[in-house]
Amino acid sequence: MILGYALSIPDIKSNMLEDLTLDECARYSNIYDLNIFDPNFKVRSKKYNISGTYDGFAIVSELFKQFCEKERYSGLEFCSLPSASGYYWFKIHNVIEFDADARETQFLNYNESCKGYEEIIGATPVCLKNKMALSDGFFRTDLCFGSFAGKSPVELVGDATKNKLITAGFNEIFYKKILDNYDWEKAK
Image 1 (cartoon, rainbow, N blue to C red):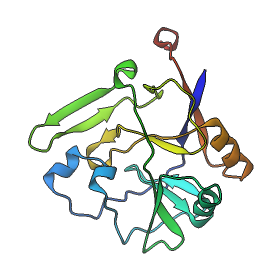
Image 2 (cartoon, helix red, strand yellow):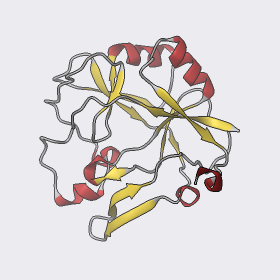
Image 3 (cartoon, rainbow, N blue to C red):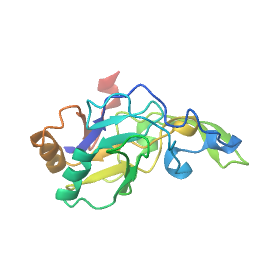
């Protein structure tokens, strides 16, 4: 059974955190826990309504924000980017538990004093603990994946949201199925 879809969005070939000075523990954190962005960040390519930076920030246009507001999706935050008028850091506060054991996710280089991992690898295919279909709306995994301060969650939608996004013309999004059970033997 299909539980929902993981969003795969085009990258805009830049890093949000690149010009910021972060402390040593930032490398063991993630973009949601750090909760900062570069106020001087500029969106170089404005051809996408939703895209992502190399370090995991989802960036959306005013048009995408208006779509979400029209649909009355809750649990979303749009952080205005001061140097990129009409663009926002798209934060999702609806959290879904990721099944790291089933996915065989790797947690690398734990730092006791910073209370975090340097890298968390193994986000796809997405495995969720709850085997019920996602409702209409946007969700994110409780785990953030990647390396150093740029670890970020996987953004998720249910079938109804996927269909609404397609109908609204957000063609830059690719949808990866989230299944209720993944057969690792067939995948080898």
